[in-house]
Amino acid sequence: MTDDDDLTFLPRLDSQLCFAVYATEHAFARAYKPLLSQLGLTYPQYLVMMVLWEHRTLSVNAIGARLGLDSGTLSPLLKRLETAGYIARRRAQDDERRVEITVTQKGMDARKDAEAVARSIAVKTGCTAEEARELHARLNALRQHLLASEEE
Amino acid sequence: MTDDDDLTFLPRLDSQLCFAVYATEHAFARAYKPLLSQLGLTYPQYLVMMVLWEHRTLSVNAIGARLGLDSGTLSPLLKRLETAGYIARRRAQDDERRVEITVTQKGMDARKDAEAVARSIAVKTGCTAEEARELHARLNALRQHLLASEEE
DNA sequence: GTATTTTACATAGTGCGCAATTTAGTTGTT
DNA sequence: AACAACTAAATTGCGCACTATGTAAAATAC
Image (tube, rainbow over all chains, first blue to last red; front, side, top):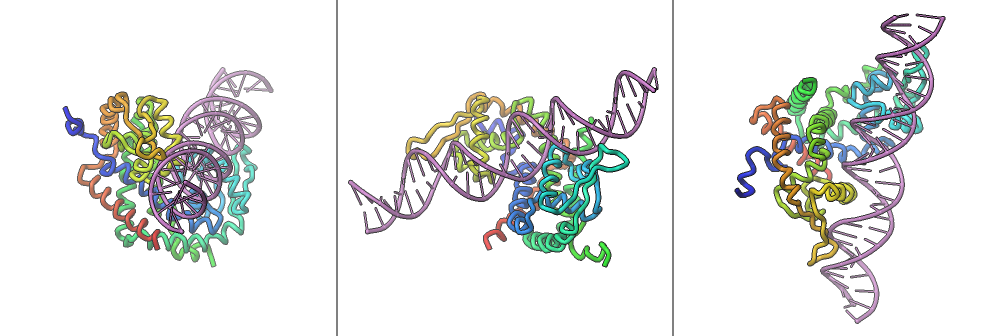
């Protein structure tokens, strides 16, 4: 039995879909980093801000639901965003367990710059709008399957 | 000027390709986690092991080149893999700056279990082989573009 | 009304991942 | 041979991301 005989299923790293996703995610994060750092934002912080630009005010839980992140990750991240002046955190009055996250004026003002960043990255992907949409749809379908199989 | 007027380009988080990739990567890592933990491996460690199953012996730099990771990430990770008994680390004789990483017998033995894990995940994605190949190719193309634009 | 359970967020601990720096070794130049 | 420049890996510091746990508040059960 040689090494090749063992390759019944386990493909090479390069041909593994999960690795393609992993490597692409890292490539995106790296592409975003220098541009976002000019706004004083990290890539995960940018994703959080995107949620908040849509909604203006959300609870930690709601942000987490959109991003698939929990309070362990979000709490310190949101604190840093608050320190940077992009958001404000306040205990909700109707339920004091909840903390409301609100975008500040400075945070809203940053939206324009973020727009330029997103546009720049879109160009760098070399994808047409149709290609991006197709890829996006496939990744979403894949993810739904993964999530569905988790509940079994 | 209402909020809608600002949406010249910045799409909603949900329709951002970069977020689809981010969310999918996290979904993969989460899907792998319980299965790999039975082997005593984390997802990044599994990726490293995949490289080493192909080559048996590699330098830290070579592993990093395959995975897009640097020694800052790999050094502690490899130390933990060594502690777990999956690999051995040894200074190369021809160039003592280099550290050679070799899979142990225990590490090679784990390959079979990893195969079952990979097979299980492939099923959970709900992708046909053709779909997976297509998606993989598109992600690779995207990544090439991102990397190419970095050098400008 | 009281006790118990559940919920939301924060915190502690561990493993990544990156940038900057350090340590040690090798190569190139004079 | 001596010194400068470069290289490989390790370390330091910081920000994520997840799990487990803690704190406080709200909901539920009796």
